[in-house]
Amino acid sequence: MLFLDRVTNETQKWLSERIFLGIYRDVCQFRQKTTILTVEKTRLNQLNGMKKQIYLFFFLLTWSFAGVAQGSQADKITLVIHGGAGTITRKNMTPEMEKAYTATLQKALETGYAVLKKGGTSLDAIEATIHIMEESPLFNAGKGAVFTHEGKNELDASIMEGKTLAAGAVAGVTTIKSPITAARAVMEQSEHVMLTGKGAEEFAKERGLEIVDPSYFYTEKRWEGLQRALEREKSELDHTEGTKPVRKSSQVVVPTEKSVEDLIFLEGKKFGTVGCVALDSYGNLAAGTSTGGMTNKRWNRIGDAPIIGAGTYANNETCAISATGHGEYFIRAVVGHDISALMAYKGMTLQAAADEVVMKKLVKMGGEGGLVAVDKDGNVAMPFNSEGMYRGYIKADGKAVIGIYKD
Ligand code: ASP
Image (cartoon, rainbow, N blue to C red; front, side, top):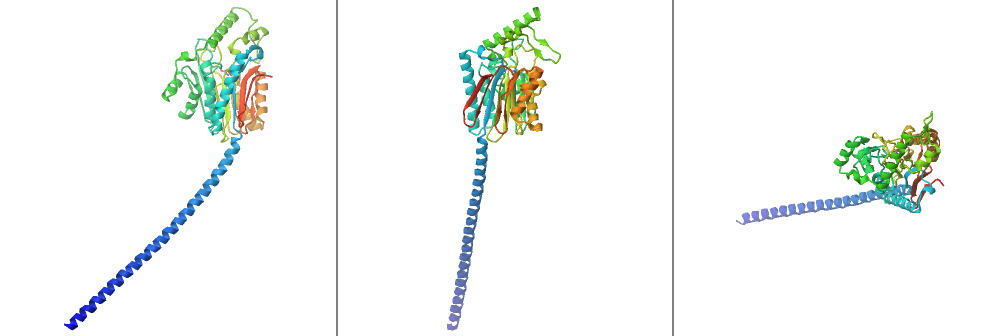
């Protein structure tokens, strides 16, 4: 018995020792593993922390570089506008009219400037600026559009982005409240560049743009302008050669003394299209133009304003252009693209290229008008060969400079 007891006791002891040792070993192993895990976790956390710091460092570095880059471009933001060229002289202007034009030009410049200043794109700035002028009855665009021979308002507009050379235009539209917005929609929301008439209107409606009754565009002043143009046309047909512009062999239209006098009172000589070019803080150029065309136009006549390369052009490599004047000449002289080409291929400065086209080429052809332009460095040019041009520009300092007359 005793022997049995002893064997049992020994076995129990041996077993408990094994069990204890086993548990002890397991605990140790577990603790070891946990410690290793904790160490690894800590190391991982440290690594992650370092990684985060490195990422943060590079992020801040890139951000500050971008900031510096943006800062240097932000210094160059520039917006230039025109409200039409033509027979605009001090003699023909009342102080009230001058005040009204100046105030609207100022408002348009400030509107575009505010967009550029807070980092908006040149396209956004142009659209916002042109809205101001389209909504003013003073200018021949949107609300103040001139009348066609049949007594309608047919509007044209175009817009172009210098970075991508993307462009959009509408022509001969009668119910779209903002043709410049429609032109932008064509550029951004269709695969086309130019839409006309009913189709353009359907497209605008489909895209949710504001559609108005054609009577929205009626203004007394423009209606009277049409009546005077019609009377003049009639008297020209009825009588004399005396008041009629004569066509020379080179197709230069040389009005006689009397006809110039007549034309002063006609809307046809006060072109009145609106346009805007801009350079934004990302170094991107853009151009936009909006117009009612020319008083007494017929047969769905379309001028240069919606023609990319003629009335509107933008290319980040060179410049952005918006023109105003006798559209037929501006189309034939391919004004916008010609200036850009002179800069690109001949290395001319913006001013020299713009003068070459407006003051020489167009003058030689008999094409009256002018344009506003800005280049990729923010240089501004506003040449015109007519008696005046509503115009202005604003740069990073926010000071608007406005001009109307030649002197
Ligand atoms: N260029 C425009 C056109 O011929 C007219 C204007 O500038 O007022 O339609």
